[in-house]
Image (tube, rainbow, N blue to C red):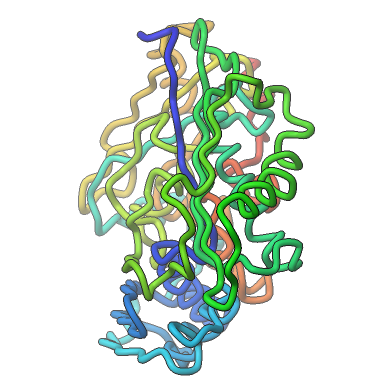
Length: 397
């Protein structure tokens, strides 16, 4: 296991084309579940110059204007320019309404233990959850700092603190590790775009980003850029506008950004655009829940939980744990603790986190907010899989 190394993670603003597609896909999920918690929905999106393509399959008693949902997200992301905006963007759809069936009409809150065993997954895959002691949220430091920079860029644009910023932007943070612990900020990268009506110089953009974005983000952090930290602010020069008019976007293309910034493993399946009865979405949340509680209970300083499901099973066929030699007990014992205290059956996960009803409780805007700045480790949202309510029972084992 490496102990001294440099690791970088990236994030993206809400106007990045890939993140725009993720938000549109999840906004559609929100709208269906807000009106019909039992809805089944799969939505995928692709965007390019002045064109957005939406494919959706759904079974629901709700009626949703899918194109209108997409236009609202485009506007909310800040695209109000001639090149790409919510009014003139052409939206092409491929929609398939599936017949309603008795198999979808169950309330997981009323199921007996035997009935939950009969709710099988219809996807297969291996899903990962990770936690470590690098940050208070028990997330790797590079991705958390990259997310904070992306949030700050969106904030200063919306507040017009930097009025010439366009919605598209990316961030990157490199951390130098010593003895597998964060030791210093190795690099900070920020790439932003400006409105076509603006003609700011590279020097002006660099100064503004330093003062309004980088300095506030690192002000209260335990590690801050030092004299040797490499700063990359628009290293390729001034970029006009960006967004879909320059490069395309696709749902599910930023899995590393959505999870652990590639510091830990992640599934190849997209998280956005899926209702909660998809194990390839909620399995990731359940794995994070278990890993975070293990670390919070001081059973390990790092923990990766791996859940593997096969089609037709109600629970994972394999539960594996890797604590990277930081466990206070063996990985096998921790895996046994997890199996004892966490229920990874699909219906149990949906019930534990109340995943079908969260959009209704959050005014129809829950999953869309996960689609940018990460699905795990969020401190700005009250996510049920970020709770550490299993610590006492794990610590008593």
